[in-house]
Image: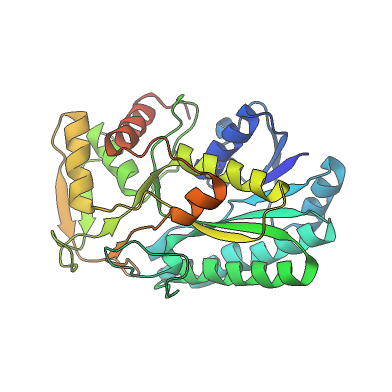
Length: 325
């Protein structure tokens, strides 16, 4: 049965589309191309340019293609931007998700997979956070995603929709076959920025805050390869189709690296020094957040293949050097 992937021309969504089409799924991509790229969409998927908030369009897609599952990647993702412009984030991430879920209910789509974030936890410390850990988002971005999780749960309870929420930690790297990667102009992801700087596309790397309560004073994050995350989505869909219950699960590797540790690793893999400059903290950034991913591994049968820092950085550098869009 066809899968509707919203935001399937973006960084993570396009990798999930490749994983789905590589394994024989029929995929319809809905993307307004505001940050995504037509060239990123698998040649074996159909792209429809449009907005997830257009309920008439979404309804037609569901009806005409017989959609049996929605993977929802569309949204705004920059934490400091959300602090500066919360209205946009609540509109894009919360209001439009409500509209999309309503379209799913009206169209009797049985399965829904939602792209959430570790930002729902706020600062977790260096110990891995479980799904049952306190939810204390520190930014409108995190709150907009958490509100969407709550809405999805309430709507599912009322209407019988089956769902999986995957809470991503820091996604990095590129398609192992070089078909897709992070191409958004002005991206704020650390490995993307460092890869651009390593290849001369940026003059320097800026580190925001050196006074956090960590070993070297910089933020700690859990980095996950984008292909492993794409596989988690495919497995989540298979689990729902096999009768699995609603699930919320972390997607990370259960180990954290500081900003300086990550930049040192980029220098090691690339073989050259980076120009690193230090600035004040950014609003909304937690000091540390690391995933406990045991639930995803046990419930989804998820066995990450690229849990290796050099592999993540190497794929990002190759993509940045060779990318075609």
